[in-house]
Length: 187
Image (cartoon, rainbow, N blue to C red):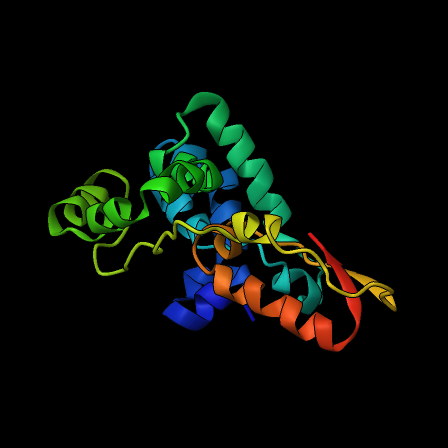
């Protein structure tokens, strides 16, 4: 079941609702400018591209793939929204924020900044920004090598932006488990 539908319980956020909106756009049934209509953008915006629709739909509809194509066509003639650019560059933004973590966190949690982000970017002011840490997982990992002289195997930890810059304690705890397994760990 579509996670955005489960959260909103609105028909337009089901695969059927999205397919109907696309069909209406193709047949001229939406408001002006059919494919650039805010109605269609609103319907596709909450699609998380999780592909649960593809696995559950008897017609094998892949709404994520349809959304990719729609956004590609849409962005050929319209600017990419600032919100999308910020989310796409979150790794870069986090890497610039990490050395100034206390200041960045204070800045991101201030009421005027949250209000400004809501009005200009579309980030809800009630949703807290992820806390940035100064000691990233990568920085921590550089000073910690696997201590097992003859490990039984190798384990690779694939870390992402949020583990590295926001929740390194999750990654830092993993080598402790791997020591118990007598494994060499890499990242």
